[in-house]
Structures are given as C-alpha cells and as structure tokens.
Length: 224
Image (cartoon, rainbow, N blue to C red; front, side):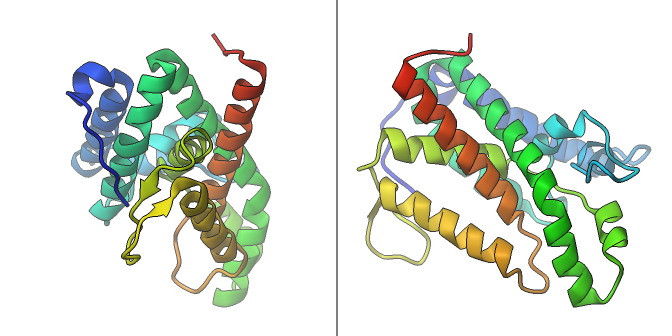
C-alpha cells in the first residue's frame, strides 16, 4: 500500500514518527542481541489471568516484534511512516503521540476480552486444554496502534487514493481501510491453522482510533 507524499525530512517534520521507528528498531535489535534476559517474554502482552501477565505489558508489547520475521516490523514501520507522518503534521507531535499510545493501549485492553475465544480456537485445533493456551498466550507488535492511525487517516482523508497489495488499481482510503478491517474480522472469527496474526488487536486499535478521532473532530477538544 502506498501513496505519494512530497514531504521533507521525516526527522525534522515528524519527530514522533521518526523516534517511534528508531525505538522499534532498537528494541528489535535488543531482542536479538540480549541473551541474558528474555525481553520478548517480559514485554509481550499476556492474558491478564495468566501467571505471566504484568501491567507494563499493556504498553511494552507495542514496541516488540517477531524476531523470526523482519516483514513484521518492516510492514508496521512502513505504515507508521506513510500514515503517521500525515497525521503528525495535521495534529502536531504531542497530539499524535497521545493518539498513538491510546490506540495501542486500547487495543491491548480490548484484546484481553477476545483471548478466551482465540484460545478456544487454538485449543480445539490442537486438541489441548484451553487453559494451557491462555497461560501461554503472548501478543507483540505495533499493529494495533498503527491500525488506529490508519482508521483516523481514512476518516480525516477519506478520498486519498491508496494502492493495496495485489490490487492493480487505486482505492480510496474510506474503502481500503474498512476492507482491511473486514479481513481482520473474518480472520479473527475463522482463524485458520498456523495463522499467528493478531486480528483482534488490529480491530481493537482501529476501533479505538476511529472513536477517538470521531470524538476529537466532533468536540474539537484535545487530551493535553
């Protein structure tokens, strides 16, 4: 997915987006380099009823990515740069950072309500107790926050044309982002074996992002 952006230096014009990308890359490097401490397990989002859950995970999970797949962080950071840069210039850096973190936090909270459903799907497919899947559940990635950013972009700039993977014609944001959300909804409800994508995290972030930008736009208020 791409669109034309004639902006200048991302570091100068989009300090929050720039620093978020740097932080995510550095954390991924630490996940690979640090061997004395399991950063991924410490920071990943666990089910709140499990022994592994800690409150900080509601935030830290959004700065971790899959060590086995560089595509995970590449796609997330590309989307953050593409859509986040526009929103940061539109709102200002402080408001954008608040929005980003609220979307990630909201996504994590909403995911907690869907873990039993997802765990039951996995348990039935692998013929193991649901309690084991719930105990071992871990979620990482910035996708929830970024889906919130994309939802806000679609609301504020609905007629911007985007190019989606495998689709040869441009699609307006007001159609493209809801299509992606519907794909996530289907993927979450009818998860196929081997699918490790956090569909409900995506949906949670998109929902929080949409509601927040709707509130801001309606009331013309800020959170700072």
